[in-house]
Image (tube, rainbow, N blue to C red; front, side):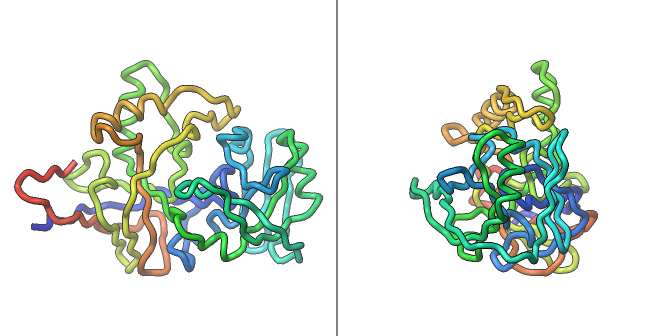
Length: 285
């Protein structure tokens, strides 16, 4: 027996034009060829060894705010003049190394280097040799990439309630880097809607198929204003996740990918379809 669908609305939408930099809130987006969002994580920052780096290695990446237009990518950092890179400018080819967590190896992919000016800006603002690259189709479409991160307002409210109960400040949604923030409507407003759904289907035809849980690392503990790394909210997420899923890695949110449709817009409504119940003892949490 299939449980009835849960109505919801899309209340937040983010792109991350450069991997591991801050996100950019947008009002609408379109899917790309791989089931993600067009403009999402097409660029990356590489270190002196040509490895794509991330906030776990360099927390100050969280302070770099990208702005993506049809013609340019602009990076902003507190106290510095912005860096603007024309999207259509010719760029030299290069190779980058991207960590494959499943196989525990670095894979090599072709990319395009944004040039010495961009490298000097990143190196000066972040304090170590870095370069900006645009990833090629092979890197963007590689296997094992989680295309979309989905989180619900109910889950965020449950976390923030637990944080406040233990004397901690609330966590901003941006710490968790969702692409899609959904909010349940009607009587079913329990947290962790995203964990209980199999697909999200919006009025207008866009459908996202949900899959693996988002296993959490240190990134939510990075302060978005000064890049300091604390203990929260990850310590609280560990407690909450252990209660729901004993013996499994800490999770918060789920991954998915677009399967139909060509447009998403903040405010769109839809239905979350739940998988069939597995016998009379099935849990719907």
